[in-house]
Image 1 (cartoon, rainbow, N blue to C red):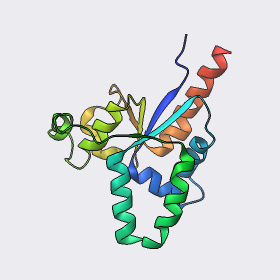
Image 2: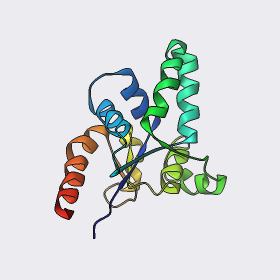
Image 3: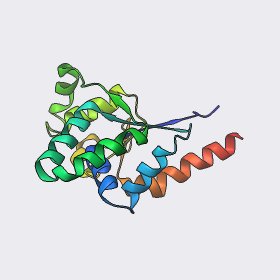
Length: 155
């Protein structure tokens, strides 16, 4: 029997892009997660939330109240900050700023890590890596149809 849900970890840039635009793949992903469909579990890391809030306070403080109102509507599972040892495990493979993101996605048992910075994870040979690292466009155009086909097949 096929897996009943897809666990989708959103990088900070996907959440920010989806919040700041009313169209495009990041917004489609956020809108989809806000529906609360049982086949999708959206998640992000506490690290990502802190990064988003830090950037909004510094660059767009007027947006912060909109963000604070919108983020609960996404029904995101927030993965706690990963242990230092877990982060260090990936620090040599990818940029240090991305290691907590990857560690959080793995700690959350994510099937997909959706990031606008996929190039930052290329050293992981993303095709065989779990979670599968995809751009927002790849998620919307390639992954979603796959998920819907699996659901249709199971019924």
